[in-house]
Structure formats: C-alpha cells, structure tokens
Length: 250
Length: 250
Image (cartoon, rainbow over all chains, first blue to last red):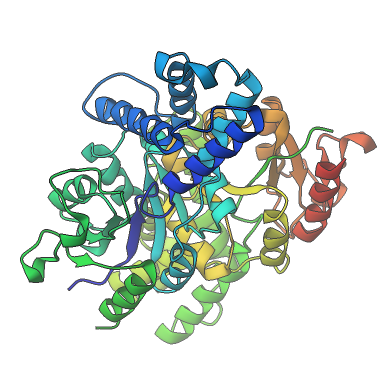
C-alpha cells in the first residue's frame, strides 16, 4: 500500500454534526421568539441542508450559481421563510435574526472523535478540508470546533463543487501529491466514488443519518478486502490515525 | 480604529528566516560533497532568492510563467549550477542532491518570535498566509516551523503574484472581510504599499537584511501617527498580538 502523504476531508456530516447543531439553534431561536412548540425544527434543518445540496449538485453538473455557500444558505433561508410551510416563523424572524441564524453553519460542533482524531492524524500526514463550504465558513468552523487543518481547500477556491472532478484534481495539484498517495475521508459514498474514479484512496466513516444515498446502508459499507468499494471503513478519526500510522511505517 | 478580523502574512523573510536556513544547508552540502571551503554560500542563497523574486515580479506585471515556485526554484538552481560562477559545485551535485536541496524552501526556520506570536495572535483574529510560495511548500513549512495558520492563501491558488492587486483582492474575497478590517504583515514596503492602496491596514516588521528596497531603511520605517506610511511598526509578532488584542477590545 503506498504511503499516505495527505488526507482530505469532506466536512459537513463527516467532521461536524450539522444536524444536531442547526436543529438545536433553530429550537433556541424558536423559544426566544415565541414560535409554536410543535414546530419540527429537525425538518427545517434538513430542508435547509437539502436545498443547499440541490444547489451544489446542479452547479457541479454544469449549472450556473454561486460558489459561496454563505450566500446560497442565506437565499434558501429567505425562500423557506417566505414559503407557506414555514410562514408562521417567517413572520416573526427579522432580517437581523436571519443574518445571525445564517451563520450557524460557521459554528457547527464536531463529532466527538473529530478534534482528537485530527490532532493525532496531523502528526503522520497532511490534513486538509475538501469541502463545498466557502473558505471563511471553514476557517470560522475550525476555530469554533478546534479542527487543526494544515490547509483549507474549498469549492469556492476552485470554482467547482463536489462531485465535479475539477475540485479533486485541484486538490491534487495544490498539495503536489499523486492520487495514490492521498485519501479522501467522507461519510458519503457519492463523494468517495468520485475520488476513487481519479485513482485516489478512499476512507468511509459511517455517521448517524448522514449517508443521504438511500441505496447505501452506511453500517454495511465494506472495504475492498471484504469485497466492497473503499480502501478503509473506520469507526472514528482516532481509528483512522492508527491506520495511517501503520501504513506509513510499512 | 476598526477591529481586525484577519491578519495576512508575507512569509519569506517576514515569518521565516530563509537567509540563515538556506545558507546553512548549502554549507552542509558543500562540506559533505567536498566543495571549496572558500565558496560564498550566502551569495549563492541570495542569488537563488533574487532570481525567484525577478520571476515573480515579471509575472506579477503581466509576464508569462509558472505560479508554482517549487518548479521555478528548481529551474533557477539548475541554471545557476550550469553558470560559470558556480560551475565547481555544479560539477559535483547530482540530480538527487539538487532535488533534495530544492526542498530547503519547505523547511525554513521561523524567526524566534514567529511561532509564539502566531499562537497568541490566533486567539484574537484569523491568521493566514498571503505568500508567493505554493500551497504544498507553505503547508510543509508550517509543519516544520510550527506555524498554526488558519488558512494557507497563496499566489498559486489565485494565479497572481504579489504585488499584483489580484492576489490581495482574492484574499479579501475568500476571507469575506472588508479591506479596513484586515491587515497585511510584512517586512517589505513594496508589499505593504500594494495592500495599502486597496484600503487594507498595514503592519511593518523590520527583519535583519530583509527589506530589499534600497530606498527604505527598515529601522527607520514609521507608523502613520509618526508621519510614516504604515499603520503599525512592531518589533515582533508577540508585540503585534498585544496591538491586535488592544484594538479588538476598544
């Protein structure tokens, strides 16, 4: 197995737990502003994220649109709050509240293993983001959740959203590393399949309710040696640090 | 004074002491391979760096050329070793030795205040590189010299060398910050003048033998309040951390 010179990480869902953080902040805002107690905040969070994903997929496939997800998240928020489904809360949330809420994506909490795992990995290899998030969002999130990235690589820098091959190839170019000596770490098979097609190594990390692709059962994803598609399946970043240490010592 | 949301740093000469590191490694290689003891290694280091600067200035002004300085440093090295001035050592350094030597730019030592200063600054503001160096070089250097950047911004990413305005404007865009809330930190007035012209704040750090512009005496650069051109002149990054803490508390 070639040595791993660099790991690049999907961030939303893989490193940080957006669902819990966004749902919690929505609920707190609802309580502060007097929204109905029956409001399904988890559904609001999921719709917000899902519309962002639709935007990135459309642009990744060649459509027009912004590469700054701060702008896109804010536009989606307004559109949702103007829709019939969320009109009750739309009527009570001011411009200022909406601006503050939009920034929730900058202060997502890491999964419990993320910070200790990244510090351990950083000793053995380069660790960088490869995220559809914009640079400032990723920098703020790293400061909030203590994620010690060696480099913040982003769709915004490369004008390409995952799974467009341009974003992965740009990462290879700027990290000056051949594809077989870099691994993408993600909780989503669509992302890993795109990286694998370019000859990169792949690490799947199952995260609760994160897979997204209904044809994939995250608990059943297998590594190549077990007949699956990816190079490794790991339960945590700490486990991944042990894998990388072992591979790089061989 | 507006709060400082982000600091961007010139790296070569400002954060790291390239002259000492490169001269030392050249001398060690010379001793290992039996070069004449009279070889002026400091002159070799200065010529290597000076030719790189000529390349970046030429491209910054609209000329054609690579944005990956790893490639440019390697080409300059070969050209120097093929020249009459350095032919004695050119005849004894193999391809492998040259490749290894080229990487010296990835392992430059920080000035003594750089690492503690950056850790202190990181608590109060975003700290990022804005360097003519390529991404992998800056990442390796950060690991070698323990420089805890929040983001690695580089000429290579933006296809623009300093002092071309495109590189400063790209930094503003990706850090999502207005020019008055960011400061460039540098030991070179040409760089700070370019940033100032775009409305950015400026911090001059005098470093021994680093200014380069013969019309500027680094020990005599003054801040605006003393009738000079820059917002602050600081003796160290640790002093800068105190300035930023004070400004951001006001």
